[in-house]
Length: 556
Image 1 (cartoon, helix red, strand yellow):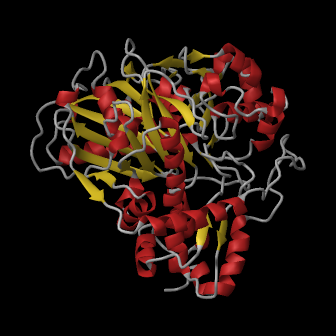
Image 2: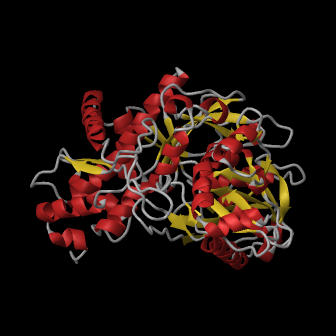
Image 3: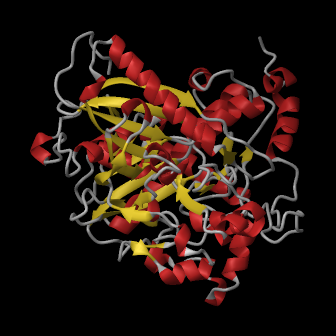
């Protein structure tokens, strides 16, 4: 929503939205929820080995500083007084694990990103300690299966493999946190008195947190052999944690939500049964289940949705998590080179209008919900000599929609009441081909808010509503009505079911590509990657099928 060239009166609230692909800082009018200005910086992902995904915590932090500074400059140019910013909220990529030295303020290793797969052998080792090797053994306590996805396993790997971290732990210098903790600690003073905290939504993604008591669980910490001294203090999602330093010195940081919880709040899904799907690097469908956690029988996660105040009850959600959504478009751009920008994928898909029987299962990091199958790997199947890059692009977008259909089916089975429409948000929702495909594959309308920045909006709402700030009302009657764009299904259900059945067949073929026990890689852990990279096979096949110029990006 564009800002007008006028002085904006009344309180403003800022939101740091630190995602897997980029960092943004956005400023909203607390009375109207109007987005006034923002700035975005892309974040590099590092892939030092196959299956490893890392980011530089210092680069993440620097991107936050840059976004805050640039947004404040833009506001000043619009004659908007930045002293009207009364609070800051933080939304972040969840599970991504950071360990740093509290005496120097320096990270002790790169952040291990939620998508990272290096810990599969760590998971296997931990499973041997569990009766019947049951990966759902702790689900009643945590809402989560034992998986490479969650922070405790990543932290265990760091403690096992990084000597510098072991020394820091022994000397009492180490701090652990998800990205929210790293940002809040750094922005509230860092080594000079920074606040080491997290909120209930981020804590609930670590596998060290009891979602019923809302506390770190002593027995879980013992199982993973994680010293509790490393852990941040758990706070609600809406309270004053500390005061900003830097460009907005003295402004309270008073909201913190994992990105998917923030989007649920930003979509105003405050009632039982309300759901939203966010299309980012991954795809995340959350359904509000109210003040009692509901355990899934169909491969979904139980997670804390939000706790909007220290004395307020926590609300819970069922979540379906898909590892690869927007990341598949980035992969087409960066790895295959068949597009120069992510926006071009929509154009290619529109030119094709169909995948022509081609199906793409982007299981680059195994399969998440509802399968939780780490042995799966990405495949493209149904290729013929007629297949070209347009069909591949269309199949990539379809893959996002099929994966959403799978988790929506699981959600409907767990909740008992099928969703009549799907509320959506996230960067990929700007792709109209994708949104129409999603409606066609789900056979229900897809509803997109005209202001798509719902993740940042949720963080801003939590910050503005915090006790001691009080500039944003969360009373239902005070919430601003949202205008939406609707996408209605345009194909008959029989065709949708046929395409979905073919997709399920492709998914079955993606499984069992990797074995979980393998030869040690010399770094104190085992690698599950014994085959050549996925891209090697796809590129080799596609060179023959659609011409080397499409693969190398030389079709200029």
